[in-house]
Image (cartoon, rainbow, N blue to C red; front, side, top):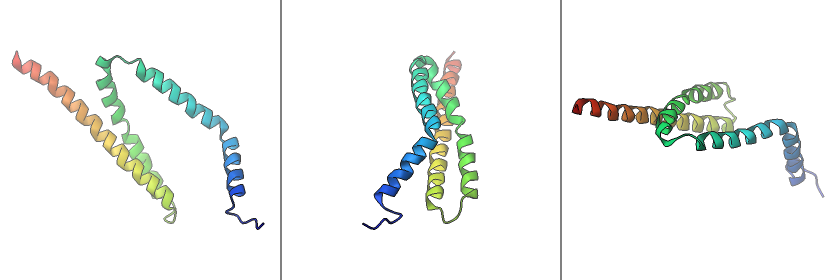
Length: 116
């Protein structure tokens, strides 16, 4: 049997080595997922819209970070460029959505003041 660099055994060993090297980071991400679900699940529905509009606006940092990463990526690294592009698009949609929700929420309060 020929042992080429693209064999399944080599890929599996690489994956196992990567998981072992990043085990602590993986545990932290899993813990963050559970904590995030608990925190979001306990927010009353009255506060959900203001908190989400503010949190979505924070995604501007994601957009700036993705642009910086794309600027420093090797032009031949298609995966990094594609991932950066997706991050810019999704982050931008989230920022715009956050501001739209905030604007809509503020319009609801303006309507009540004008009726009085």
